[in-house]
Image (cartoon, rainbow, N blue to C red; front, side, top):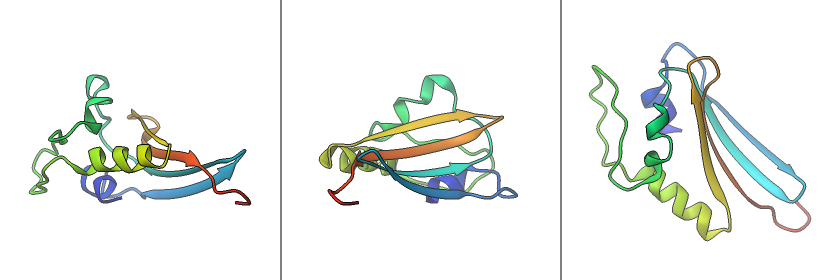
Amino acid sequence: MSNAMAYGDPTRDVTVSSLVKEGTARLAVHNFGNAIPADMLTAVFEPMVRGETPGSAQRNVGLGLFIVKAIAAAHEGRVEVTSSVEDGTIFAVSFPALPGA
């Protein structure tokens, strides 16, 4: 959520959604702004990798998405990202839902 606010277009909404379907729980954060370059889409989940926002005083170490990926994996899940100028950026975490959810 903080990445969406820091790197997204401040004039556009950030949306958080959740869904449980067919035994899978999914949590997604969506924002608009500059697209993440295609060559960075997988690298953003590596430690010490961080985005750059021109003119921003926003600073981070580059561990947040790495930690998200590790938490997802610890719960037998995965994290994915899609990003384009037209559709915005979506980070989604999916993992097995608890029985009865």
